[in-house]
Image 1 (cartoon, helix red, strand yellow):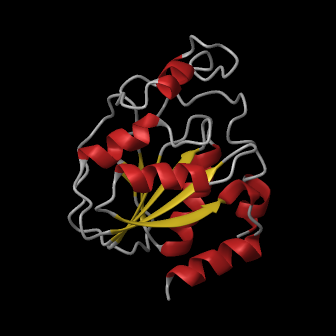
Image 2: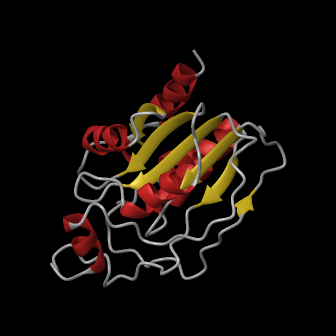
Length: 189
């Protein structure tokens, strides 16, 4: 897990370059648990690193939530009230289009990760949850954040999806290797 300690020290809301090579297919490790899916949205790469750690630790299948229109650095400018992310923040019913095509039927446990924006999950995460039927599946929410906690984001997701079995996770780029292992162990109980 040394990659967790070293690799997740970046800020989730920092001004990293957005991914121009985002994929809408899954990357499967050699030893996967076919019942675990680790779906994530990452704007700057921080959440992608966290999701890879979760997939590695759980043996889950890694799946990137890819917006049809990738967020640029300008879209993520929190100081600009006219940036795409700021406009979406003011319009929580918006659902930015995402690339779809995932078969969720084989999965029993779904980890959903995202960067926290204004104490919320990005709306592409809502689009993902709207696009598939997760009824009867355990959904474990995790995130990365510069200064926010997970609780407001989780509460908003819980309110939006009351029929889903949502479990609150942790902010992974603020979590030690020991705390990460303890969190995953606690989910097995």
